[in-house]
Amino acid sequence: MRKAEFDEYYENVIMYYGRQFIKNNKGYHLIDDSQRVFEEYLNQKACMKLLMGKQGQGQLLDRHKVCAAMTVAILKARIIVCDEIDDFDGTFGLEKSSKINEQLAFYSGWTLMVSFLESENLSEMVKKYKLPETSHNSDFGDTFARSLFFANAQNSLSPELIANIYFLLEKYNECIC
Image (tube, rainbow, N blue to C red):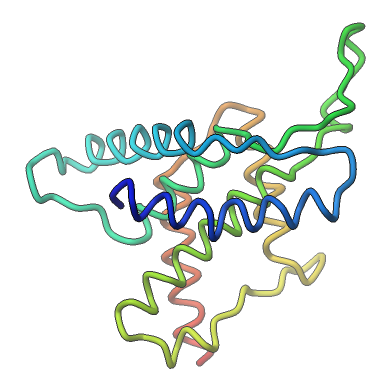
């Protein structure tokens, strides 16, 4: 994704979801820092290319890996911040933390995934795309955001694993269509 494409995506997807999340969750504000997100996206892409052995000119990552790189970039940039975190006395615990950035990262990444599919003339299938239900609630996005939160808290985010999850979500939807 080139910078101009990223800027459009940033404004129309990331900032759109970010505004929705802070509107629905009082006590948060959005930091508009597209450069930080873009630089982290480039870092994540470069790391994945290195791991996948795709350093040569013209060696592109597939859509799942691009979406995973974007998801991790948004997550690491943490552009939604809580106004009320007061940790001067060291009493702010993990249980008080919010997964709002993880939700932003997942829904932005999923939107990118769907846009890739639409651009590949798979629009008939895309119209039917949905996220699977989970066994403990019906919101896959929340479940996945919680998983991202704990992986990030344990410093164990894996863009490659996230790419595989996007791949499985695509295949899941092919099966239910």
